[in-house]
Amino acid sequence: MNPLTAPSRAEAEWFAVGLASSFPDLGSDDGNLAKPRICKGEATPGCKVFHVPRTDSSRGTQVPVAADSFETREGRRGGLKEQVLVFRYKGKFHAVDHQCPHSSFPLSQGIPFDIEDFGVVLSSGLMCPKHDWSFDLFTGTSDRGNYKLGVWEVQLREVGGEGRTISREEVDAGVETACTDKEVWVRRKQRIG
Image 1: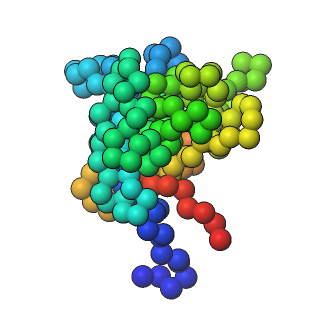
Image 2: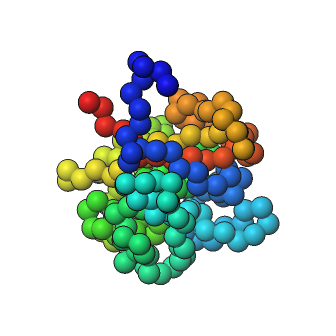
């Protein structure tokens, strides 16, 4: 252990969510995240949802996602509060809280989109279908009100090893698009201080 590096807090441990190739690459015209898409020859939801307890992320489990129903609203094993939504949008992996901070609605029913200004893409967002509120996928800020979506850290790692990880800057630059044999790992963002 490096004495100059503080250990991770218990609630900020990394959690594996699957191979990068198991996530369909969503475009802006694909509709809600939970809608099934073809990935590796099979119809699979466009996102994955996991229940990750704050006290022990190693006990995280995948939660089934329904495409057109809101049965995940009640959630299982602790509700939506301890759930993370993971998906790939235009080649970039995103992990956010599954619960809309405004209406406690499942964001797996949300629609991803580009945040643009005069035709220039500035960022990506996710719209909650309950009240049409939108959240930035990188900062978590909402388009109205003072609500903030929890954004998780994402890493891509070599399969079965402690290989080189891809930094957030590389993820933002689209490096992972050619890395379909990587494992996707997520964790809650650590607070500084």
